[in-house]
Length: 405
Image 1 (spheres, rainbow, N blue to C red):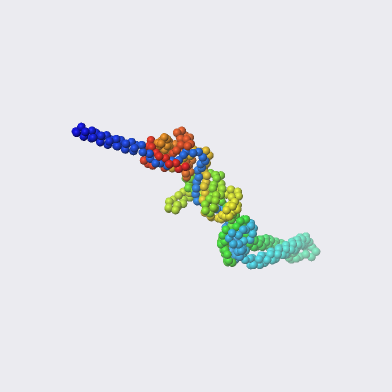
Image 2 (cartoon, rainbow, N blue to C red):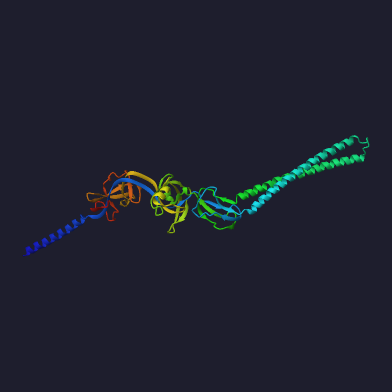
């Protein structure tokens, strides 16, 4: 009886150890569910995506050329204008009267000069005659009845004629100077009259009107803003740490709800000076303007195919392609993590177990990352990698993969 009890006790112990061993084995061989994706080859590109706005290289601010009463033309905003077209007129009645009067003054001054010339000519003739008479009487002084008194009177008349000539010559020079000055008056008034017609400096459209009614205005006050919409471009305020990768000529995609599709553009220029701007969260950011021109025919295509027209200062979004490559070895970005040594690693599934692999990462976008040939001899197209690996995952653990592609 006692031996039977010992046997039962041994059997219970064996059963207990067997159950514990089975549980330990089951736990050791339990597979961790993971999400996996296959390594593939394909194109990849690095982009800088940012909000932008449509701009013009030049906005022509037409202002009052001089003080006066203005009569603006009937040109609503958006109206097309041609270079040299009158867009406003200043009241010019007083100026025209002054111009007519100035021409009369010029004629009068010319007649005054002519009279002064004639007077000088007469003075020269009188001086020459009296000088000759004085010389002649001096030769016959004391003879032929020429007395000293007559001789003195003759010389006095000669000197007086000389002084009269000098005075008339000075008067002529003054008349010539005044006549020359008077000729500037109609030229000046005609120039002012020319400014009473305000003309468009460019072929374009009216962007903004500052004056709608007849009113007195001072010189320099704004009248209209004009612009050539054929030169429409986009300007993006890009973070300086991203702008260092942007180069002239890189491809740009313009998109967003305003566009309703995708328009092609090219980087024209990265401005040399950055600026500080507060983000929506109140954080100071260093940004720089990146300018891009639409490719030929893109704005026409937008109007023709989508029935839309872009205007000035419209909000859009841009994707600037800073680098691209075909046939790159790609994995999801979320599969890559930092190792303990600071290097890049990922888990590849082999024989149902997770294996850690060192990788060198090249270009990346929002979804994928390029795996460079350096140091990735153990990774090839078709391998399964674990996406967003759990922190509890470690080398050699059994995994149960659910492929997401």
